[in-house]
Image (cartoon, rainbow, N blue to C red; front, side):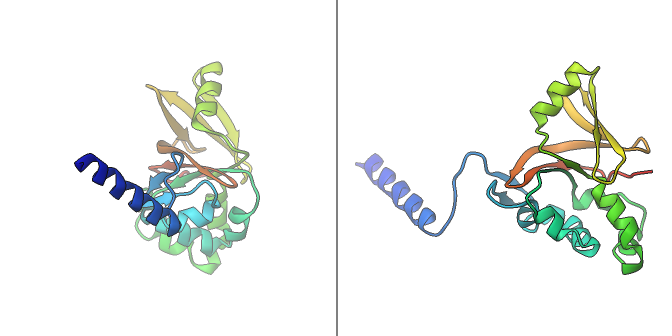
Length: 186
């Protein structure tokens, strides 16, 4: 009898949640305490992540919201707030000022690659090319994705390295890979 009541309660809870618009999709990943829905765009999901408030503010300051809400497809290497905190003191505050919009835009679009590149695709490509894959960014310069001890790392033009901490956050217009360091172009 106890199992029957428990099953009934679970069924009622599930129906209540589905009626309220909650999703239990297996492909929904949590980032920054928020569900990332594959039916939403990169920006629609990112604005809900507590770990990406600095990135979202920078995207808004650079005027890239419409671009990252467009059809895409894009692969975004998304630095966390902690990644931005590693930058020299005052750098983020300076970059979001209107007079530095071009510099901010250059840095942000350096984190974006055309097309959808999943972790599996990147790993497979790296295995076929001596452990690395070169990706051309929307900004025009290249990023190098390297496979090291079974983990993917992204290396920027200046030799800086970022670990992919959460891979394959699928979006309606591409994929996000959460990274722990801001990548810097030349």
